Each structure stands twice: as structure tokens, then as C-alpha cells.
Image (cartoon, rainbow, N blue to C red; front, side, top):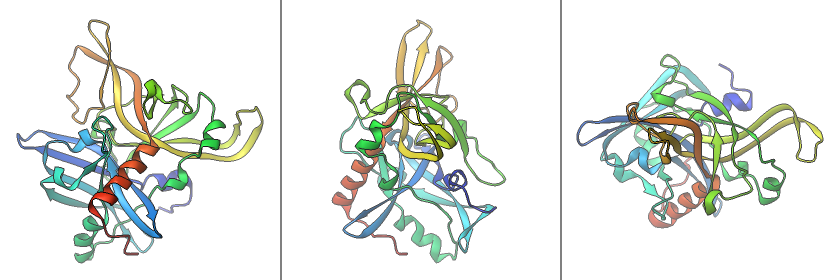
Length: 282
């Protein structure tokens, strides 16, 4: 497979995460690779939700193998990690459901085995600036990439792409928090999925003009979802990681909660300041 377009590159920004608790309960979620530069040093991390890795005794991360600068479609490397929870470093605020782990320490034992990993990383350059946020409309097309209900292409080991729209404006902090809503089907396994504003071809600007090209921004991470109970109450809960997470008296209403991209940067910077990590060896 030739990786040419932006959409094709996005297929390789995520990793599949599987966990097992002390009691043997298994779950899955999504992680993505985010790379930030501090003092001219590049630091790649894997990002996901705190609730994806919480209370997990064992974990698995699946990477697509590479050969040269190309992916080996159909070949994946499974990294098994004991005491999985311990490798993650969460956002300093308890209610911000973002956590990260340095990528380099995970890749070192893989490279020692002679295995090459292929991935694409996101970075702050894809996050819209305040001026760019002002140019975004209240309703924007979005896509998110991950493993809904644990689904993926089991032959090619690639994730699933899904579409939706913003349900609240990106220019506003929903309920005063660094988050916004999307109108999209967010299922178990989508936890930790990166979310993008994405339009390719002809698209309208906020002022009504038409542009030719691609509108693309990394805007956040899927964290939770709204449900309707049998009592017709609307509640919000973490996007499930287990397929049987939702009891039969709850119904998803296709509203997902996305934590803004700046929470990823804040978590990243807090982790670097706290633990210190190795920069990208490349």
C-alpha cells in the first residue's frame, strides 16, 4: 500500500490497546502517537484515556510493522506489558481523562529484536490556533480513527475511520471545560480516538467563500458519551472499553464528548516535567 494522501497517513497514527484486569476482565481502546518538540528535542508519546488503562494488570499494544519507510500491511507486532497501569502518566487534574506514556522505551526492546515499526505522529502544528478557531463554523465535519467495539481489519491490522459533525462550537468550552460535543456514533473501543476537522476538495469558509484544498486540524480525543436511561434521564459516562459495558437500560444517543487537543499538550508537558524522557532517537 502506497501512503500518499492525508487520510491514508491517518490510518497509521493509532495503536490498538488491549487490557486485562486483576480479575481477568478484558477490554480494548485506542491510543495515538503524538510528538512534541521541547528545547529542540522531539518527544514521541502514546496518548489515550485514563479510563482505558485504569486498573489494568496486563496490557497489549499492537503496532503495524514497517519495512524501510513503508508499512508492512498484514504484519503487526504485539507488545505485552506487565503492570500496565504503571507506565502511564495522567493529566494533573483528575477529571481530565487523558494519559500518556513515552514511546521510545516501548520501541527499544522491539528494535533489539530486529523489528521495525511504522507509524505516523500528530503534533501541535496540527492544532488550530486561536485565529484559526475563529474561522471554524459552529458545525464542522469531523472524523475520528480507532477501534469501535474492538473492531479492526484483522487481516491488515488497520483501524476504522468514522465520520460525524461538531455538535457544539469548537470556539466554546462546553460547560466551561476544555471539551466539545460531536454528533457521531461513539462505541466501546473508540475511547482514546483522535478527532480531526477534515474536509477535502471544495469547502466553504465561515465567510461564505469557497476554497479548494484540504481543511485539516487535530482538535481532540474521544473521552465519554451520553446515554439515555430507561427513566429518560440523560447521563454522561466514559466511552466504554468493554463491549458489554452498557446495560440494557441505557441507550446511546450518538453524542460523544471530546477533550480538546490542548489537554493532550498539557498532559504531555506535565509528564515530561515529572519523569523526564528520552527524545526520539531518530
